[in-house]
Image (tube, rainbow, N blue to C red; front, side):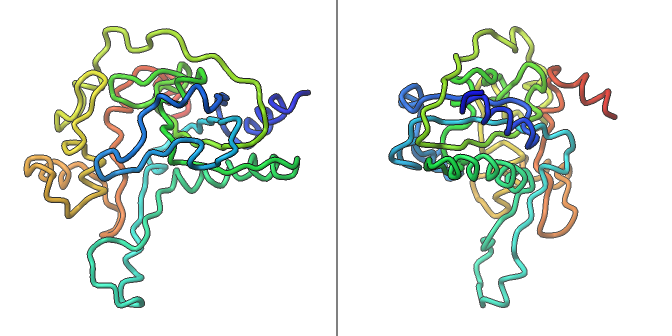
Length: 251
């Protein structure tokens, strides 16, 4: 069994549902830099200068609770921190992904290679480049088996691995169920107006760039188990036909 085959087998055993491998060269033309004020997308070389392979892995998020986020506001008094910006935010799906990805990192380190996990490269577009799916009309990664009901993580390594072919095909076709389902009108086909997205509104509760009508919908629809936690909106995800049958069979 080759190193590439071993990594994919180990990733499946860890709970990932699809694995693709790209070379840094095939990802160089992807957009980098700040996406609004949400994330600073970095190139693989910025994350690991001697990177030779990029491993993209998806995990099936079968329950809405995967999308819960908790702010560490309990630290305010202890640190005499007066800003309303949380010191830390924990999102369950990221914690799950990082925990599982570390298995692959440790395996590669044990083989004598450098390896780091990354959530900062352009994950969705990179996943398309190594055959995992398409970037759909809801701007999320749509996979053939699980639809958008997945989360993505990458591992960058100095190991030279066998590269997968880009995904070919159109999973969305003329379907626009995700666009129609969005309660704030944040979606246009293959484009998102991020300031109208409920996930952004929940993540940025004090941002002044969120329209008032979106704030009202956010207060009505966003699930908040506690004053300092919320469940990220998945309405456009649930509207996608891909993966729905699998989810229904599990329920």
